[in-house]
Image (tube, rainbow, N blue to C red; front, side):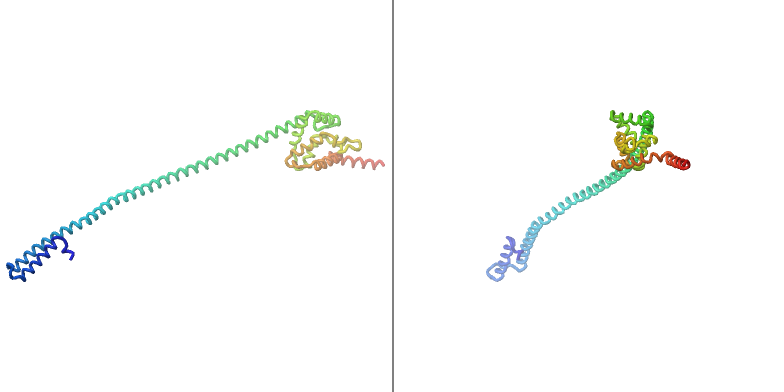
Length: 281
């Protein structure tokens, strides 16, 4: 029934109705059925053609929409391809950049290793120079000590020389400090060894036989001399004896003076003297 809409449909219906009326009315001028069919057929064909034209006009917007959609797709397909191309190009650029960065990093690491090795060589050179300089300074100090001791007639041989040194230590702090530094370079394996080495460099054994710690039995007391403080400070300059107490140093000094009579053949001489005395008796 949708094909009967519009003016053409109404006209076709009216024509058919008129043909029906004429066929049943004897007063109407007669028309043959062929003529009626031709007229109706002509009008029906005209209506169908008009209706097809209308349908074509109605479908043309759909076709145009399809064409517009296809055109939009074609327009969009080109940017997608361009995006992919840009993405591939970006990936290539990133790859090239990574390769360059890796090469630069490799070069930097090599140069860093070279610099580290050079620093190690410089450190070794500096350490060697310090060791050589320290040895030279030690040798020079030992020569200076020997020279100064010779000038002061060290080790001291008699009591007047001991008293003259004592006066110098009391009157001149600079000489006292210098003597501490000189005797501090003597060194030693421990407190006992250090004390014995310092006293041996300072006092002759013949003078040591006339000295004891307190000064009893007609001997000179070492306890009251400035030389005792000088010896103690010199012992502490040895890194091994840096924490030595005065009591420890005092005990070793007492023992050194006590054994003075036995050193340098003194014990053997006493035995010979005792044996000869008994023989005389």
